[in-house]
Length: 556
Image (cartoon, rainbow, N blue to C red):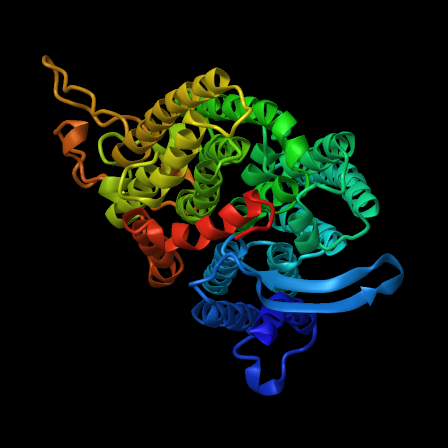
């Protein structure tokens, strides 16, 4: 178990170095590009297999105990140790990261991103995976910070070199926001470690803030919380996210939404809740208020983008939806109750699965039509995706209803438990204020359903067919030059049925439907979304004992 966890964390980093070397003669395939993309699939597949074996070997009867631990001295002068371990909180995030990175590698093998050499692309994705996995596995504050920062440079280059329009500005905005937040976070981590006399996260959690004064805890929560809030992303530190998602390549958007955002909320649970409980108790109502504002703000922004004629970008809309969904995660954490924190951890996993699927689907739409503009995607009368590519349309509708929290799918449980936690927050918190937060969050779910159903109506069903004229034969409508049908990669309109019948009777445009490699990359996300929705105890059984121990100061 110790070897497996160390392998999971270190293997992607070693694979990144190997990706930059020439491929051995027997593994080159038809081209060097194909060889390095195959290398990415192999390395991420091995990491996923090791994560699955680690899960099977995990002691599910004692998920609150740190398992597969490694603890060796690294910098003796500062008492910094190479301390790794997993429990019921970190294990699901570890597996989610390994799964999404493998699916991205499979997708990229069959559909390489447009841009520079795939060698650098594969190496950057593997470094990104290693940093994310390390964030969820390390148990030392200094190592946590290093792993937290390790993902920034790879994501910057993925956006700046392989992104779309506006990629340079979006990449700079991403790196500046996150680096500034990280500088403040480092000061808070150093304050805790130096005042407590240790950087060991297990020892600090067991101490439960007893060696830190209330004033130190308040300063630490403020400093660390700002850095975590930027990554979460919490309103009003979210403004880098829509630009980054809009410009990022498909794989970059999937990893950014699926795993990088979880690093911020994981830090709140792993570091701040157990290490500075008094400081968190003081700041919890403010965190809940910002979370609820994010829920409402994200939903209203999505409604504005979904409006016909707004020229809303579908990738940007899903990015704003992440602000709202992560607001539920932060609300659950801010309740300081087992129910709310379990809901936050469940919503983390659900968001990774569902939003990862949605960004895959939007990337496929852009590849087929040349656009993610909602007005263009919905412009052809009557058919849209259901008529052009019915399986793709069905998967998009599934992702949308899962994202809006339909009971029976993964998105439902996390948001419901977060609101349950707000209904009865921890002792000492203002219950009327939290009831108000719960009501506003509930209103946010209605807004979420509204904009997602509008998007499904427009993208999957298209614009309503115009009524045929009563006094004259129907004429063929002139081609709309702004339609997605005029994009370079889109098949030409089928005019064979455009004689005298109304527009609604024409044969709809056809697009390539879901391909085999797309089924391979997307099916696991669909299956896990259904399983988590129908059997939530599979995940809650892991997280609840660990959360109970965390909130009780290390006592099982």
